[in-house]
Length: 154
Image (cartoon, rainbow, N blue to C red; front, side, top):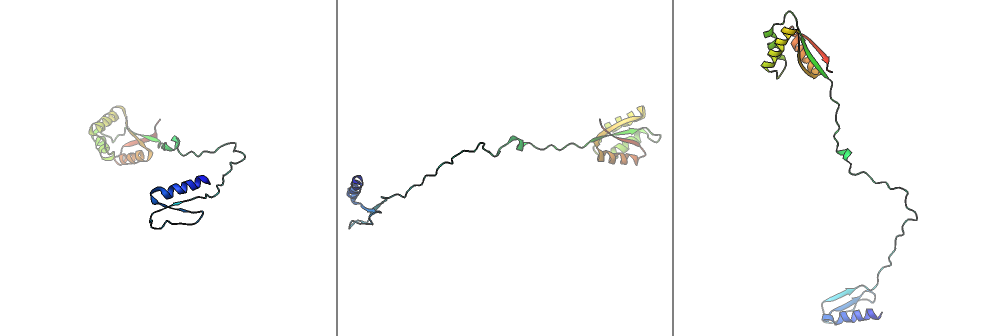
């Protein structure tokens, strides 16, 4: 208590400041507009007690995982081979024109190679595509009276 009174006296004498004590009510030194408030009582602090026992295991959520960064790879569609077979109505120029008309992106040089192989060997490999596309190309080549085979690759 003695220390408290010394602090109050020091504050009152320092630069003419008035001290208001919250425990005793407000008092003011006349003629001074500046004042200092000081809290003399503090509320009782409650201390939270730790639990009597700790859990046997801790569950930590997986917030960052490299597995979540992996992109899912969709399975590839099965691929099909388109093969031309020799027929009596297939001449080299007709085969080249049919390939250029039906298969988009077919180069003239590649079409001539396929036509030459078809006339020489009787069989020529055209390409490998997904089943639907291979069937579409085969149907287009059949309109030119060419014999085609679509079979799974591998």
